[in-house]
Structure formats: C-alpha cells, structure tokens
Image (cartoon, helix red, strand yellow):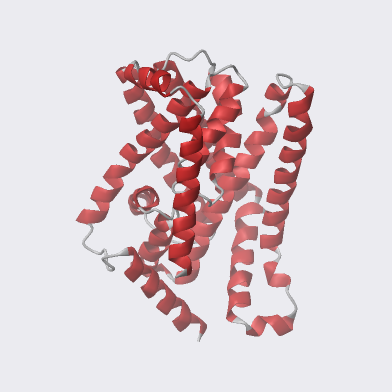
Length: 330
C-alpha cells in the first residue's frame, strides 16, 4: 500500500510540474522549436548519451573492484545497461538499482557486495555532482544579481555540507555502541561503513570512482550542449557544464517519475540565467528525457536475451532479495 501511495504521489508531482510549465509557456513556440531541431545534432547528442553507459559502467567497476566484488568486465557493463533500462522503464526511478543488486546476487557474489556496490556507486554519483557544482559555480555567480546570489550561495553551501557530512556519517556507521550491534540492520550498516571507507578514504579508489563520476556528469552536460545547438540556442559548452550539475542534483530528489517535470522546471530556471527562453529550455529538457529513454532501450533487449534472468518481474526480484537478506541475518 505504501509503495503504491508513494508512486501516486510521484505521478501527481510530475503531472503538476508539467502542467505548471505548459500553463506558463508559449506552447506554439515550443512546438516550433521541436519542429526545427537539427536531426544530425540530435543523433550526435544521442551518441554522446550512449557513451554515458560506458562511463557509468566504468564507475561501477571502480566501486566493485575497490570492495573486491569479482564481477567480470563485460558482465558489469551488461548488468549496468539493464539497470539503466529498468530505471527508465519503471515508474519508481530506482528499479534498475534493485535489479542490479539482484543480478549481482544471482551471479553468486553475495548480498553484501551486491548491495553495497550499488549503494556506494549511487553515493559517488551524488557526491561528484556536489563537487562539480562547487568547482563550476564561481564561473557563474558573477552573472547573477544580488537577489539571486542571496539564495544561490547559501543553497550551495547547505547542499555541500550535507553531502560531505552524509558521506562522513556513512563511513562511521560501524562505530555505534556494541549494544546496538545485536540488531541485524546495524550490522548491515557496519558492513556498508567498512566498504565506504575503502571507496572514499583510499585516495586511489576515491580518485577512480569520483573521476569517472565527474566525467559522466560532464558528458551529460556536453550532450545537452549539442541538443541546444540542434535547437539553435546561443549557449556555450561552458554554460552547459556550469548549469547542468545543479539541474542533475535537483533530479536526484525522489519526488517525481524519472525526473519528468523536475528536470524541465530546473532547466527553465538554470538556462534562463543565460537568456534562454522558458519555451526553449522546456523543449531542451524534454528532448534530454526522450533521448535518455531511447538510449535505454538496448538495455531492455539485453534483459530479454539473458538466460539467467531468474525472477521474471521486479516484484519477484525484490521478494527474492528480501528472502536472501532475512536468511543472511537469521
């Protein structure tokens, strides 16, 4: 019941945000933008986003290697791509993460490594976004008026402190008093803390994982820049690299269906700061979402041809993972 309620709330948020956009833009102007898109540049942007699968796979490989989960190179890419498909295809937005955990577990590599590998890869993705925001925003703050800086700077500070504090907290979760360790959840958090220190406090591992994470975010920004060129928008590659990290950071909030509505509104605000119209920014966000959906389709094909799929549905996979978790903790 709770799962369905959360899903309905996300659908409502996406619908409300999209309705708000449509109500506040010139829909005819937006349609004209779409009709005039350069198809060659649209294909190029699609190719750049396809390369994102490679970068994401390398990021996950770096995490798994650090915590000694011996998943093969090509198998990691295959499972990562399948996860991307489920993230796009399922309304919750995190179904692909659960499926990756399930598939690594079914490969016989243990629930701890499967679960922690996906969690830490996700944490690294968000942490890299925060780092990128901190690095790029000085190039941008000079373009803001005093009123905008009054809320942008504190917001960046709060998010940054929260992100680094969150990672620090994860790394010390096994320092809880001994009396709490009788609880199986606490023991699981202790294992996560141990693996988190290996990933984030080891300089070599941290550089590898965060390096691939930052590369991925820059790659997405470049795909947005190419889409903008296809829409004949007058922005630079640096504009996109500076403006997209905050948009991507907002999209990590689990409040909508696949980021729909959140992405478009965030891009209207961000790209409006470099004189991009609301109609053009909305179309840019929609195209990014649609290209993301298109690039995820091959992951579904990889899922269909797998002979070791095990569970036929997401619900069956979640049930099997829950049973495995209870078995390990009993």
